[in-house]
Image 1 (cartoon, rainbow, N blue to C red):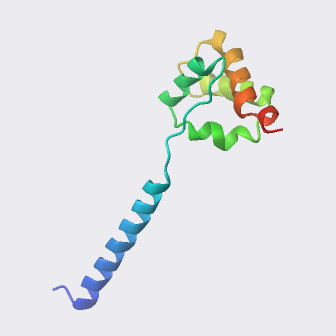
Image 2: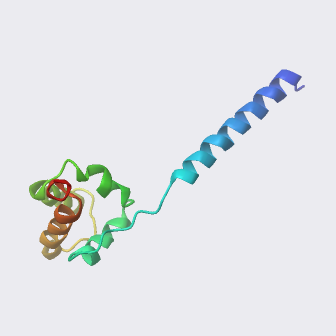
Image 3: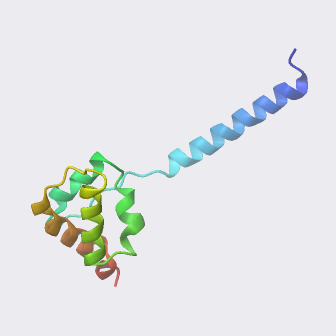
Length: 103
């Protein structure tokens, strides 16, 4: 048997979940890559993760950091990135999002 307290608890949880989900969804925005040479090659990153990853890590990575990260994505996670594209992607990420871009 469902008591009034249990009904109230279920309703409260339902409202809380709805508020949290609605708030999270309303704050989400679609990340767009900045224009620049190498953008087209970098778009392949979305095959495995959201583009938020780029912005989250951008303040920490310089050119060598982005190069290492792209190589890690290829070697450890099997990212569908051509080895010939690593330099272009790392340069793009550094110029648009890396430490050099934030100075």
